[in-house]
Length: 191
Image 1 (spheres, rainbow, N blue to C red):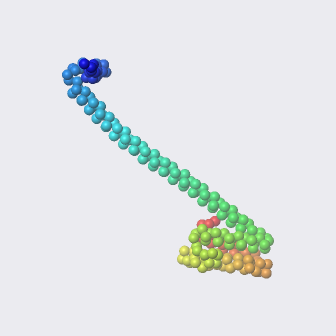
Image 2: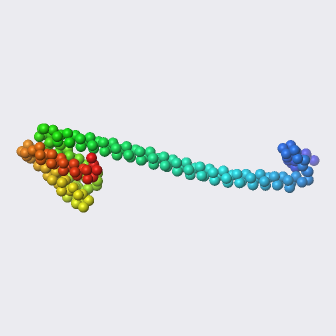
Image 3: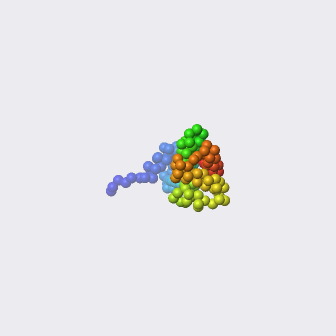
């Protein structure tokens, strides 16, 4: 006959050692089953609670991370806009400086630079056309209230560009043209 292992006896002794409660070996199967069922039930409840907590923490981490990315992106966008706005202001300051000069060549250059700024503005705003003249033709006067001023300023630029020194430019005309560009830029909050 082979020796056998009495598991009931071993479990009874382990239970008795852990709980200091005497165990009847005959009642061990029902006690053991009750104990296993209790431990399993508590384990499943804890597992579900921990799983729910884990899902909640994961969702909150994703939300916080997303919010953080949005905040960082908004700061970067504001900084880029500030940098672009500052650069445009610097460019306009250069145009204003040239316009306030006593030199006719500086006035001409100021008008040419202001026209380049106007072309950039209209391109950024999505006006169709290859040239500034085409963009101005496509512009809607209801959405572009200073369109006539832009045309007048652009005509002055064309005269300067095409006729060169043959076109007489007075300080009064240069100042008026720069003021027209300024009003257009101010309408679009470009400067």
